[in-house]
Amino acid sequence: MNRTVTATLEVNVPSPARLAVQVAVADPEGYRAEETITVTLDGVESQWSELRAPHGGRIWLVDARPGSFHVDYRATLRASPVAPAADTVDELLYLRPSRYCESDRLIGFASRNFRDISEPHDVLAAVSSWVGTQLQYVSGSSGPTDGAVETLLAARGVCRDYAHLAIALLRAMEIPARLAAVYAPGLAPMDFHAVAEACIAGAWYVVDATLLAPRQSLVRIATGRDAADTAFLSSYGAPVSLVAMGVTATVEGDLPKDDVRALAQLG
Image 1 (spheres, rainbow, N blue to C red):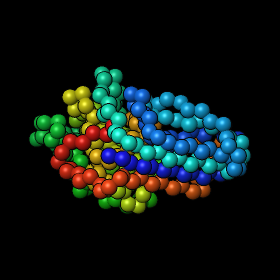
Image 2 (image 1 turned 90 degrees about the vertical axis):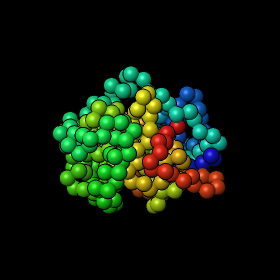
Image 3 (image 1 turned 30 degrees about the vertical axis):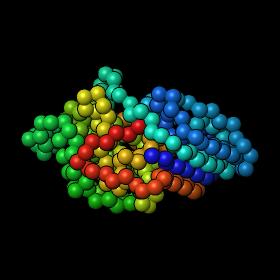
Image 4 (image 1 turned 180 degrees about the vertical axis):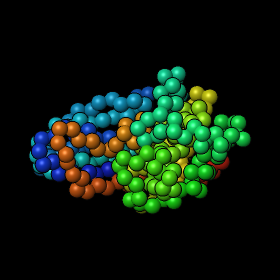
């Protein structure tokens, strides 16, 4: 499946700051998409370096002086990278509570609502269905500090909130789970997207309770415990402001049909 993704960021930098940008397609096991990258400050090409993040993630680091900072990125994937296998460290790390996925606070809730489901594959389907039916997707309804518990109480949120709640419930039932930031062909309105991944028998499977895009066409950007690890832009040393952002993600031909009852993996 050929896929093309783009991202543009325009950022106002009022005083010197270190910027960390995560918009590049992940390249696990040496996989690399065909891509073009332009990073400028006030129209002049800016120096940047690339750092490796877990699970093939890539962070572009820029020490920016005051001015207008721009990133233009385009990538084409002619094939899909191999879906990564889980190791023991992954399984332990992604069972722990985290900043936005307070699984330790939801153990009792999860056990009451899903206690009759024993097969892990069935738990994934049940959690995805429950989160998808209990939450209302409302743009702008959650804040940057809201976690899974706030989302559960509010019964509404956006993609990252759906993912955080699914992750917290899965961890509460002893299933390792993590968050992946992705490009999502078929998403409307187009934006960066967030999904959960759950580990069963050493393999990671996508859980997306929003049902907003087919899981088979997703393209991994960053992976971590929750949104704290996968932000597309972070600043250090001084605050910056996002002036404009654009995201596109398309497939060649028709979008794949997603059977929500079937398991799907993200490369």
